[in-house]
Amino acid sequence: MHETNDKLDASAMAFQALAWALMEESRAERLLSLTGLTPEGLRSSVMERSTQAAILSFLEAYEPDLVACAAVIGVSPALLVQARQELEA
Image 1 (cartoon, rainbow, N blue to C red):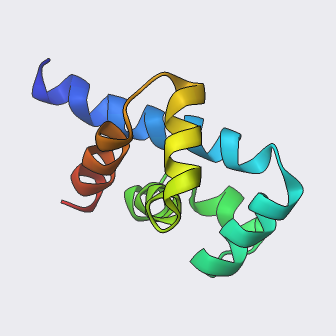
Image 2 (image 1 turned 135 degrees about the vertical axis):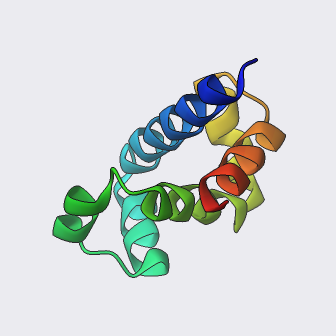
């Protein structure tokens, strides 16, 4: 994989993870609570790497969510962790 594609993939994984997290109301509320974001704040900052990293960090904080999300979007949990690290770099 080329480095430029890795960055695009990291953002894409964050968007897929966000979509997964928002599919369940209690998980969506937990995401907002733990990241400190409001729905409006999330909408306005979702393109920022720091917000994308926060979404992936949210998954990392609770391994069952990390594993379940990875399975749904078709990547390994380790790849989601790697994407978060890349977004924070």
